[in-house]
Amino acid sequence: MTHDGRRIRLHERWSVAPVSDDGRTPALPGTPVPPGSLVLVSGSGDEGSVRILPAALAAPLGELARRGETGADEADLPPPLVRALELDGTLRVSPRGRPARPWREQAASDTSTSVSALGWAALLDRLTPDQLARRLYFYGRLPVTPRRLRELPDASSVSRWLGLGFLSLETAGFRPLPRTPDTWVWRRWARARTPSSSKLYVCCLPRDLPYALRACERVLRDRAVAGFKVGFDLPTVLRPDKFVVYLTDPGQADAVAAEIVAGLGAVEAQPLPFTATSPAGPLVARAVDPEDWEGRPAWHERASWRLNICRLAGEALWASRDLPARDRVAAALERLTLAGVDTGTWTWTEATA
Image 1 (tube, rainbow, N blue to C red):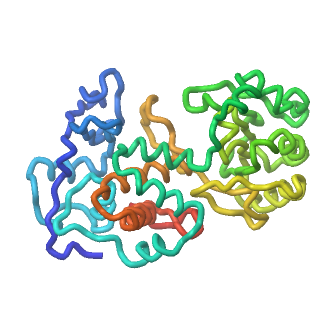
Image 2: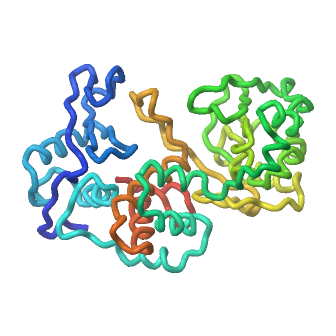
Image 3: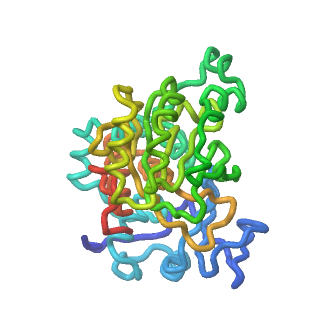
């Protein structure tokens, strides 16, 4: 990938906000950012009006903002990174790059739940990046109907329906975890001093969730399980990812998934986009979350595997909103690939930008 004489500039959506040596910026009053960060502020009024970029990008993008348009080969940015920043709407590049053939072909032929979700979101051309990310994240959630709301009107009724009082996992070392702003919609349990490295999504239909919890109790006692969580309220138990099991060793993922499927038997799956299917079948999906970034502000929710994908895809879909829907999907697939996501298997690769 080369620059080929192209011209680049900071996207007109953004301006650079000043950041003091101690990480203070008027763009985020009372909220420090990691020292050396570049803070971009949008004047478009959308919900993604502030973007925090790492210190490694502060000098080249700050210089680009001061100089205005310049030759891509004059900027201290490698071509893959320029392309990633073009795709997510940070940079304007002229002439504009079109998604390459592999991603256009995948957008045209891939009928998986993940690419179908991107195709659906690509038809929503009036939403902000943050709104697109949320639509993608909750893709596949069943509606909160009046009947469901009558049956499960509050968190207590959900707890009784799940039969949580019948789970006796204390002897296996599990303890309930408090709800936090990032985990408000979950009931969580974990083993003390047992870090997790990967996770499995048990994607049963909502009607089967109480049965799934009881059927998985023996599996949850496995020492490979670091913790688990289930939905706290009705909207969360209607999601495909309503029941998540955290593992101590990603190498045990397939074995634990097989145990879960064997325990549940012939249970129908609720498809979950942007996850890797386990060899045991679509009922259990798997993922590995990205590392948290140092100095992340408290207001900025930590990105899980799926949230990270949805945020990146939402930005790319927004930045390509003037293109045909299929090209918007291809742009999102290319941006995810540059971020180190294999969009065929929905797992990590080595290369990132």
